Length: 374
Image (cartoon, rainbow, N blue to C red):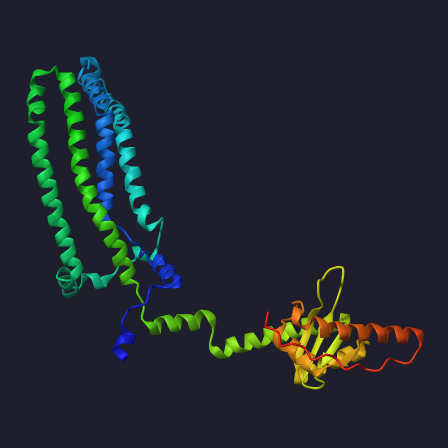
């Protein structure tokens, strides 16, 4: 049993995941990043390569066509190099932009944006040769070796098939004009890179689910860790008990504030007390505004006596109301007749007091049918 409890069988809690993100532990796939960068570069080269090749040809022609007096002039070389570098950068900027965007978007695709200062801290434990050897021969090391061999195999097969298919076009480049041959060669290079990148994409499609699974596995928790985290976040049982008691006290305080506005308090007479209020304009049936047993029932009766709320003894009705109706809910249909008898007597009692007449005798209220709890 102790061994089972120590096994990391539980999924990581939100708190554990948040702490891992702060440490820089998020799922990442180098295969996805490599494939995304290669595909972006291949698409950019294939679509813009012909134009970029022509621009580079013009750039090389202009750069090498220098007048003697310009070359011999003092201070002419540095401005010429600066201009040439800026022009070359401008030509390849779309390709660089595509690869930069892919390199940025690929990691975010599976792990989201995350920057962690803790991940930048040096970890000297990684310099331990024994740990390094252990990582090499671990299950993860075997998986990485398998991915490497798979990449070599997939890329090798695709490259062989591609080279065989493109051989006629490559041989035909020698018969084309120089500018056209350069543009055609760049387009072929972009196409070849795109096909090879598709092979990397296949490996990435396998690697991404594996990395997500491995990340979740690394963050698994034992049952004891989950319990300890729950205690830290929710507090100890004693603290939770005090909080619940405070909440109950607050609820009782609000409940007792409604007793003076009740129409009647039905009692057991000492063990139960239930305060009812009925507003025929707002409610279909009387509403329970307060209820309690023992000391709380006594407090309800005291408040009712202080504010002139009639207190009626009807033990079966008091027990039925206390058991079946929550505070703020209407009286169930099974208790309508008995509650109506009580309210009728209360109204008769108020009328007699207003006339100064003797109070009517307390009737024997009908035994209520046992209601189902709402």
